[in-house]
Length: 267
Image (cartoon, rainbow, N blue to C red; front, top):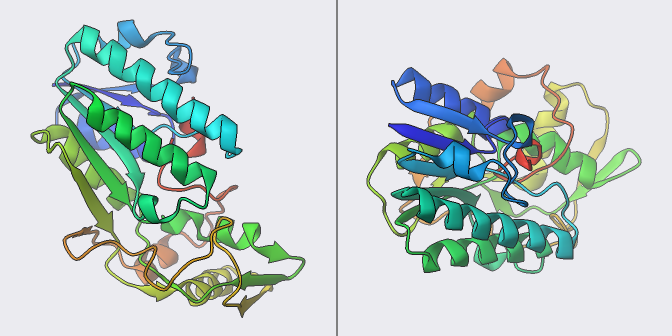
């Protein structure tokens, strides 16, 4: 089965392409680096020819309100239009757990707009909403830092490994279209400040993490359970300590949500 992965060169996309190929599928990585641009439509007709499934794990290169909305609306409309012409039978998209609760942020307003476009399309779909990735914990710390002090709320978070996210998206891609949203999350819950504190300690990062109930997460005032998936969420297998021991030397450059910046040419 031919499966086109939009954002296939990013964190989730590259893992997804490898997993699909290992299962015998023709997984095609599509991004600006390979001549496919969802904003302009360049390369979409060619790459989608003969595809049964299109998976969108691309992400906006900018989180500025106008730019991020333009990215998700334009790229999603283009992708769905070209998919319909090519006869694609299943559209899969990666989104974020709690999107409808996080609308104080322009990024999540844009993600909700993306989801609504997918739902209103004629193409059968599956939307996979994931919680935050372990890989971006340091990025959250950097975003919340003021000198050597990092102020974070104590609200709960249920993060997961990017590899588990890719597995969940892969299951959706090879399955029957669900025509609904499914949630995936990690196997454990943490208080956000404590999670970051443990991550930095493992990396010998000397910055102090301070619990501050007034601190914000990506500019959003949280409530205790706002970032948590529902009771029917599929849970990844990788526990935080396992991931931490395997990736102590990994240093992501930026804090991104479930889909990755590099795919903007996640998502």
